[in-house]
Length: 192
Image 1 (cartoon, rainbow, N blue to C red):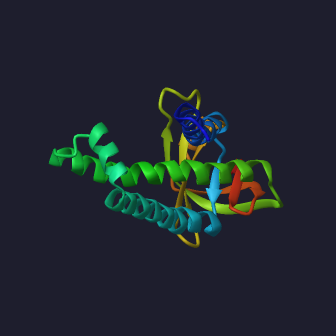
Image 2: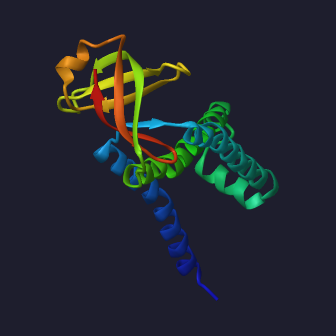
């Protein structure tokens, strides 16, 4: 039979892994920053699967809160639930936190997988809708927003090459060249 110290250590290790894994994916995403354009598979996961999982997690948490006296006591101990402002804050921030956690746990690994498991060469024409310089954290970077000619969906990427020329190409057609993955496309070059 496990002691409370062993159980506490086990819960701490699991909690650490649950929060370290999304942080690792986020760190990879910030360091690599792939020029990724999603397709319908990625968009389905982003819009439908993440929404369903977020609602499912909220349902499970609400059910545990409603039916488990220990969970209610734990929340009362750590949060001032008598305060209506505290209740509203928790009710508003919990879905946002859960959605962001799940998106970093699901969507960033998909980008990682797409970045390293590429398929055929891909090329498509887009309209360069917007060109902005990146924040001062990025050196020689521009944020590019493209509009798909057929669906009119807009996609944004960070680009680090030919910045002076790209700043002049707003509202012009450009050809994106890259590699196709199951969940989207990695852009390797831009031709105009």
